[in-house]
Image (tube, rainbow, N blue to C red; front, side, top):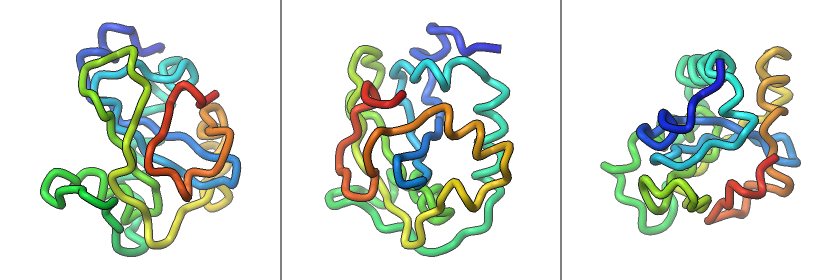
Length: 143
């Protein structure tokens, strides 16, 4: 079942993608529009969300410069599991596609480490370049 536009704008939805190098990233939507590939299936999003929350931690999260540790607890949780974590810069601004790095993993997770069915779901939402050096993410570039 697709995620309707009004649900996207009213909620902070955690969604996931991969980059060209196979790294996995987490994005907190902050009331922004989801990429079409994410909005297409609530079930796929839930499966990915459950998997990443249940993954064992692989190392400490490295908070981005200027990030408040107390405000970054959710992002750090994903980074400790190997995901690069980004959050919406301007909350509840659906047309704004900019996200800021909040935390990076000490040990990055790659798609190759995931069960094949989850890797297939992640490949639907892919950043064209590498996430490793990004401080800002433009979700408009995500296919």
